[in-house]
Length: 153
Image (tube, rainbow, N blue to C red; front, side, top):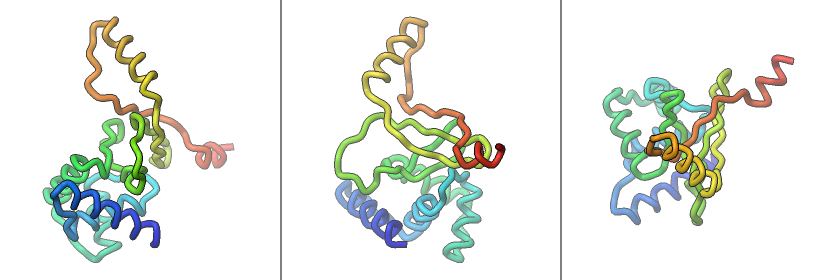
C-alpha cells in the first residue's frame, strides 16, 4: 500500500505542476491500474474500482479519466491489447527513453521497459525506406512471461 500511496502522491505533484487536478475518481482509476500487475480494459477497471473502492464509475467517465491520465503521461494505452497500464516511471524524476511493452499473451502481465533512441531512429529510417512514416514510437511486443512459460513446462 505504501508504494501505491507514493505513486499517487507523485502523480498529484505532477498534475499540480501542470495546472490540472487529480480528482478522487482519477486517483481511484490510477490506483487500480497501479495495483494490477496486468493491463486492464475500461470495463475491467470499472469492476476493479467497484471491488477496491466500492465505487461504481460509469463507462464514459472511465474513458474520460483514462484519456486524461494518458494525456498526463500517467498511463499508457496498449493498442495490441486495447487495455491500459500505469506508467512504470511515475515516481522517477529523470527523463526516459521510448517505452516498449512486453505483453504476455496468456496472462496479460505487462512489463514496461525503455528502448534506445538510436533503435527508434533506425526503425524510422527503415519505415521511410519502405515508404511509410512512423506515427507512434511506442512498441508493443506479444510475449509469454516466464511464469506462464514455467507453468506450461
